[in-house]
Amino acid sequence: MTEHKPKEDKFYSWETGMPTKPDVDTLLKYWSELKVGDIITYVEIAVLIGVDWRTHRFKSVTSVWRNRLEEKGIILECKAGEAFYVASADQVTANTYDVIAQAGRKYRRHRKKLAAVTTETEQQREVVAHQGRLMKMMEEDARKKRMNILPNTVSESMPRRLPPNVAQTESAEEPKTKLKSA
Image 1 (cartoon, rainbow, N blue to C red):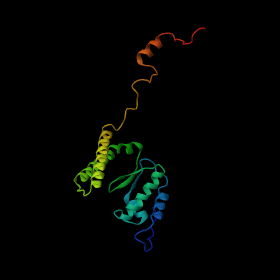
Image 2 (image 1 turned 90 degrees about the horizontal axis):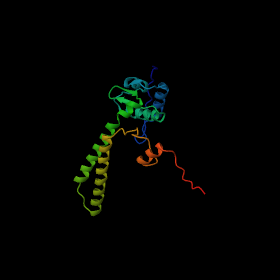
Image 3 (image 1 turned 120 degrees about the vertical axis):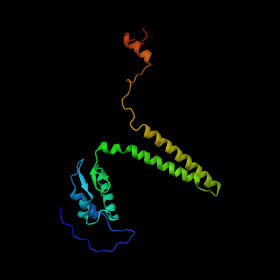
Image 4 (image 1 turned 60 degrees about the vertical axis):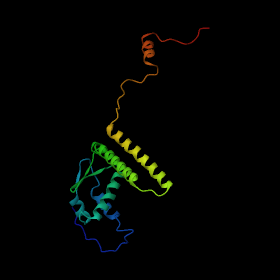
């Protein structure tokens, strides 16, 4: 690993903050050839960019870095408190159930808040009722999706153009022509 030079003490506005681009470019350059299964520890990243891995700066830089890698089709998943790893398609799809379950819980929690809120006007009551119905529908939809994450991709029978009984009789007999003789 290359030695890291201390950053200059510059003052940045809290609105714009310290730019992440130089650190993200450093990470992209250092790990330019990532493959599925590669593991990158937090300590390696922290040494390379010169910040402790428990800081907000580390989170900001690594979030932008992960987004830039995602644009290239590389998905970095996290082993909390330890490292990032390049995820395979199977590892990404394995998280789908948890994501749907989490979304369903958020819908339910927000629907309960809507039910408990005190409204002052008729318009507020209508908006709250409408949003409550939306949250209920989304919650039910999430529940259905959790039950059937992987739809059946194999058809049980080949598609037919004719009803089953007509198709069977025509295939057994000679094809009939529908032209009238003159």
